[in-house]
Length: 215
Ligand code: B12
Image (cartoon, rainbow, N blue to C red; front, side):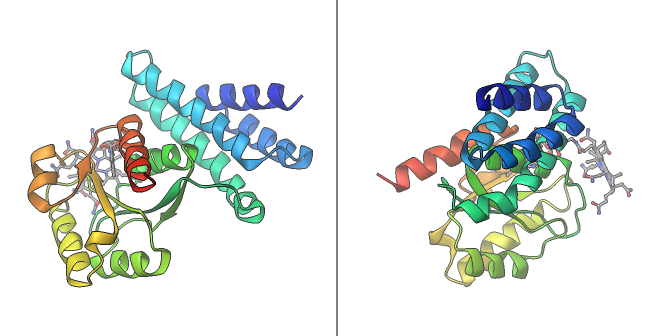
């Protein structure tokens, strides 16, 4: 029964049927299916969506729709995850930088991270360096992730890294940056640890960091 529900949940995300995904998450909670199993199903679905995107069967619009469906499912699951003390891979603090309100890419990458088993503290949009520093103090994350879509606002990533250094917090976290104007050269120049142009690569990098940390 639960396998049937999990595979239906997977399909609902791949086919971005948000209403069905919501119904299935609620049903799963009633049936006592573990959040970990549900997260795995969401993660599998997003992996499939990622593959469909890479093979050009899905385009950005489908990626965004599936990301939204996954986000709705994950939002419904969050209180359940906290309640049941699910085994998490690590913690990520994620925000779109100051003066930037683009959040679709962040939402997609963040959904993939949650789907992969990370606890993500989403700071929202237009997040200042001070807010990033405060969040790192508060949540003690393994990873800080930043998104910027404007060539002007990507400069704030540099300020955030400087603020983390000044606060003595830089060495406690890995930093991943992304968004349309963020290149590998830029990421290196500002002292970030990595960048990725899509959620599949982003979660691979984050998982590798956690594996290295746990060695
Ligand atoms: C939708 C959109 C908006 C929406 C945003 C809605 C929202 N809630 O996000 C609205 C209408 C509000 C908007 C406003 C503006 N926008 Co706009 N917008 C876009 C548009 C069309 C799509 C962006 C998007 O969501 N893409 C889809 C997502 C999935 O892609 P993505 O964000 O790149 O994310 C992917 C990767 O980059 C990566 N990624 C993203 N973040 C991260 C983070 C990490 C850690 C990692 C690893 C990876 C990663 O993974 C994601 C998934 O694959 C782009 C054009 C474009 N083609 O990108 C312009 C664009 C970004 N906007 C632009 C501009 C100029 C503006 C405005 C200044 C317009 C204006 N004059 O008011 C304002 C800025 C407002 C502000 N202060 O932020 C320009 C930027 C130009 C530049 N070089 O700076 C663009 C490129 C359009 C253009 N060609 O001119 N915009």
